[in-house]
Amino acid sequence: MSLIENLPKIIQESREAIRSIIAGSYTASEKIGQGENILLQGDNLPFMKYLLDQRELSGKINLIYIDPPFFSKTSYGTEIKLQSDKIKKIPVIKQNAYLDKWEDGMEEYLRMLTIRLMMMKELLADDGCLWVHLDWHSVHYVKVLLDEIFGERNFINEIIWNYKSGGVSKKHFARKHDTLLFYAKSSKYYFSSQKEKSYNREYKPYRFKGVSEYKDGLGWYTMVNMKDVWQINMVGRTSAERTGYATQKPEQLIERILESCTKEGDLCADFFGGSGTLAAAADRFGRRWISCDIGALASINAHKRLVSETKNGYVFLDESNRAENSTNLNVKVDLQPLLVSDKIKITITLMDYSPNSIETISIEDKYHSIIKKVIKKDSLQLVDYWSIDFDYDREIFQPKVFFCKGNNKINQSCDWLTNELGMIGIRCIDIFGNSTFQEIDLREEKD
Image (cartoon, rainbow, N blue to C red; front, side):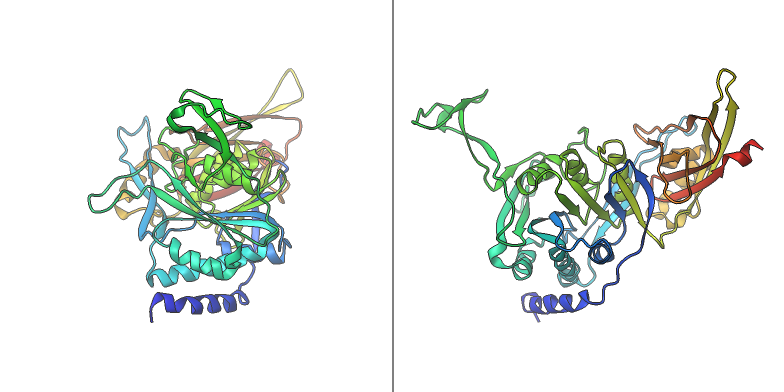
């Protein structure tokens, strides 16, 4: 039976499968600021069920943007470049981010996506919109499925994102665009038309009566409603927003969607969150947000990006059954009473670090010897992020300070002044996304 003939079966079986989905269970590994936005590392399917059943978000999300796997049959990763004064030259380590390969082909891929699209429809508000970001590999099949799930009349636009990036081929025209499918939940959907420049022929003024014209360095133009082909640059290698995540999308692209389909205070979600582009843009534009990705590498990239930029704060959730202490962290604590005041200076210093098992890291075996050498001679090069809650209550970890690795360096020591010694919590995440947590009772350290 052909794939086209199997599409109705995929739809029907996905509808039946929704009934058996069990809501996930999650714990807050960190709370940043006072905001209630959510960043989750975990499978999006039980998470969406959790949002529906336990957070009561059915019909409450105003915008869902997803950038799922494209059915590219490719393995995506990132390059880890370590530098150490103790090791002369460390080769580049290639780490796997996610695998976009499907043993049962397109049908397996479409089944994965269909059931999730059905859940997203339940979460969307009546005036909400869905944006699905794909390319030539699968967009034509997904369009047919979306027409069935959302209804053909609720298809609003096919947006072509044109960019300059990548290689070319002598066997076909260069593939330089992605496709974004824009659907509404109902005819009540919110949309605010954006404007763009439309240059006059030969860049000369028309001087039509009642038509406002403007001039810039290129010449004369008018402002018109934005068209469905967008020219936006990819995230360049030297861009300030670049996180190093393999398939990162530019903030300008997401900002345009937010401005078109949401208002300030609206709730937005991305269930294939990647490096957190939607969350970062939504936070800056005053929208509430939810971002989820199953990958540890994606989650730490998003966390590092958001923790220093967020205006409103968020909760970083993990699946409750996820192993937290998959690494070993050795910390030194120094307490120094200050003579000129009643305060005590606390100094926390990272001493050494190692994962419990190198074999569980998502890198090829040929890189294991390199990691072992780094662990032996300069183990703190593996630390990507760490944070400290100096008033830890054993319920909610709310770090007062945090450190992110940048330019191959990270602070390894921290000072803090306090009047009273109590419990502190320390969380550390390595360059592979492994996490560990420690509680330290400073009253015992004093004794």
